[in-house]
Length: 527
DNA sequence: GTGATAATGACGGCGGGG
DNA sequence: CCCCGCCGTCATTATCAC
Image 1 (cartoon, rainbow, N blue to C red):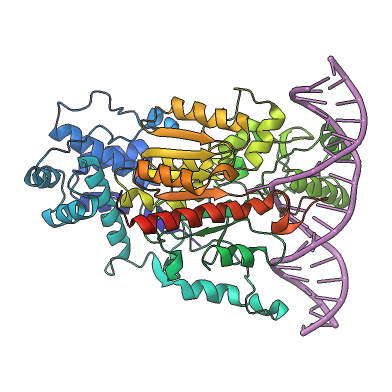
Image 2: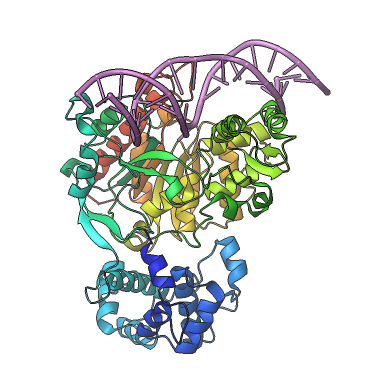
């Protein structure tokens, strides 16, 4: 099943003009400029092309602006740190000037006025342009005269999808897992859910986003859902967005229309992620995706046993040997790195698969064991960012975030990679090493906001929350994944469910969320 | 003390067959 | 409808090397 974007990109890759090219020309960009941008970025990266075109347009119209805009896409895409548009903020322009300038960039007065209405008078040119582009992209995909691309559905599709599993135990409240595990839909799907009705008590402010393992013991997700205002979890396996599986449930009250993925898309297969393994990969190992990245890796004994099992065969080993090797490779996420040689992934490689900057967890007081553990407990950035992407257009000026169980800062990294400005981030994390990692990242990425890190969620009482809310003007997002170790299937000894020693901290997430909701409702937006 | 190493199953979803 | 085999799982802990 081809994705909307793949169809878009591949349907007429040759000839005088591709669909991608016609699409952008239709938006008013000069043909030569579009051709150059596509050549530089490839047809697959719609957003990158758009960014580049906007950069060109802005430079052309205001040549005095921004000598530090980097015209080299290779360096920009590898850093994914700063938006091309960050420099173009002239908030003191009058409305007419804004309309005129955006008109020169090809935007209609109507679209600009709508953007001003939604983003506010003080919004920068970059924010306005961003908003209009998002609207145009959405409109283009919705336009009926275009060949059918994204089919918009409501949540009944979702519940229907899971209903077949509901009756297994005769329990009507049973929460089933969708198959395939794609939540409300993926960036590459042509059929996605764009409408749902949230329970009244679940609606923001603030927005909240809660994460935990999908395969929790029975009843756990029902309990979590009942505390989080009866919002149904969105189950997503990250294997649909990157090269590694990660089955997780996400309960959130975010809008689900106009989501957009991080670009460039990460490697989608093992061989794309690790090209050097292709040479040694046996044809009978048919894996294309890795299993879940966990907190520990295989011992050297395991890889040696596999070497002993396959060494000495000229052609393919017997089926019984293949079965044993494949079983171990799947269990321990091993890759082929030489003749008869398999190996577990390096921490750097896991950082990449999860969407973190290289060396994000390296140094600063960590060791190898720490890195594997922290990474194994983290978000998959592309997956979470896809869900959070709707915040970009709702909060052009940035957001205040309360990040609970922050770990190595997956939430912060996801928001930053989306280009969302982080105004105030209160980050609560037990591990001092992890707090230091997030602090280092914060400084490395030249954040202009304010990072406050705390140690224990249990110390975050109402008075403290009230004080921070008064100071910041409220939280826009409360995000976090509480400890899963008492829920995870890998735990031999203490898989005790939500009441487990660590996993019961879920109730702290709920307490803090509920307290913030109450305070913000009481203050009613006045601070 | 610190960091690396290696051994330690149960549980539930899924699919195929009766 | 049930049964059964297959598959995968954000882990814990004792022990070792230094």
